[in-house]
Image (cartoon, rainbow, N blue to C red; front, side):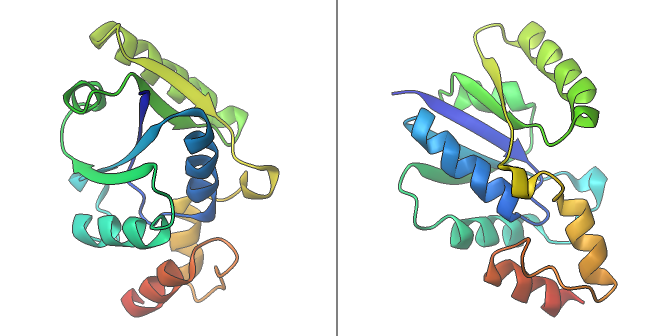
Length: 157
């Protein structure tokens, strides 16, 4: 059984994330969506809110497990028995940082591979940061997020 870890802050989880996760479940037996505490990023949603939103958004997929973590991604991957760290690349601008991160992860844990997936074309411009900013300024983000995430964004103003 091949397990992949898809780490991130998911603040909030977007349709781009969901697309990538759905496509990853075709490749891997199990995909663990690993939601990072990321206190340094000062997320809009608490860790428990982000976990709950991800559970609701991804509830229909039996190959997906949602977990929180607060350690090095490679250490978490080893802890849960994952062979792969899954990362999304939306644009060329993501590549340099992600490449550097993958190289460091390989150095820290040579037995855990990093795999990059790109989102479907209609999701390449969506990021959690943009969704948060648009929502905070009263813009409509309904086409970028699941309805439960939209409701949560409206509740948090």
